[in-house]
Image 1 (cartoon, rainbow, N blue to C red):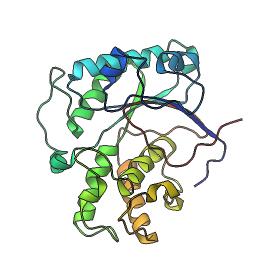
Image 2: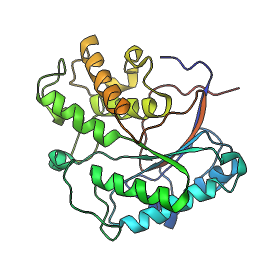
Image 3: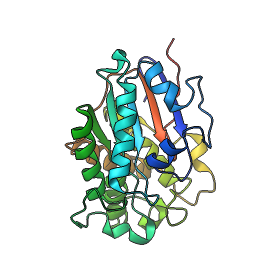
Length: 262
């Protein structure tokens, strides 16, 4: 898939950290932004954004703390009137490998609970952030995709893959091949839509340390699951392309579409 126009993005990344941790120490990052937008305090109000994505991550904080952090970032962006129509996203972090099959569990979470990587937790965050900001806030359903793809793999429905564990390289990080490709594809398709998704193949960088069997059938099966989850998700909304997108969180993977708009 090629974007018809261009694609430009910036990011504020602090590894293994929640939104609360980022707001508590806003000058600490672990990756330098690829373009000169600066850190989020300057970037969000200083530029016009088509989309801003905030990553949810468990780091010992409560939902109330992360709701406050997310709402503060969204409201900061909207101090610039050029961002009145910006689409905001909450990026689901997937379940840990050791608790993979608990993604759909319901625990009647409240804002006083600590953040956990479950669908219910993401739903709670989404509802509360929408209420706190009145902004257009949607989901990048990476956790839902990991779970659905894991179910399909374990059922023998994905050519060349045999276990959901192939999505992981350790208990919490995505594998360098399958996992990173799935995460990046989900971000791309959530923001830009699933039209033409069958044309995407993994860039060369996704073959690092791989034991995956990358056949056209494997890629096609993966892409179909990603498209199915996104198309069936009530809280996903795409933006027109080309886009200028800001990512804020602990780690980001975006399929190779970094083409600057001129």
